[in-house]
Image (tube, rainbow, N blue to C red):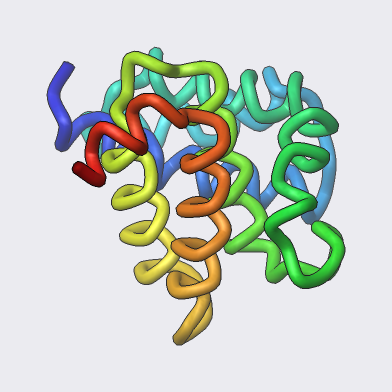
Length: 144
C-alpha cells in the first residue's frame, strides 16, 4: 500500500463522486468514466473503485452517521465537501485498516485542493467528532 497512490485514488474518487452527486449514474459508469484517468495518473485503482462503490452502496448509512455532526442537512453541504465527508466516513466505518488520522488528513488535503476556501475547516471539525465516536479506542489512545 503506497500512500501516494492511495492519495491519488482518493482525489480521483472525490472527483468521481462529485460527478455522481451532480448527474447520477451507476458505480460502474462512474468508475469507467474516471478509470482511464487513474491509469495515466498511476493511482491505486482497486482502492479508487472500493471508495466509489463503497460510498455509493452505503451513502444512506454514511449520511445518517454524519448528520449529528453537521450544522445543516447533507444536501446543503457544498458538493466537494459532501463527497469528501462521504469518502472519509466510508473509510472510518468500513476501512478500519486505515488509521483515523490518515483518513482525516487526506479529507482535509483533498478538500483544500478542490473545495471552497474554508471548506477543509468544516470537514476537519465534522470528521474529528465522527472519529471520536466511531473509532473511540483508537481516538482515545492517540490523545494520551
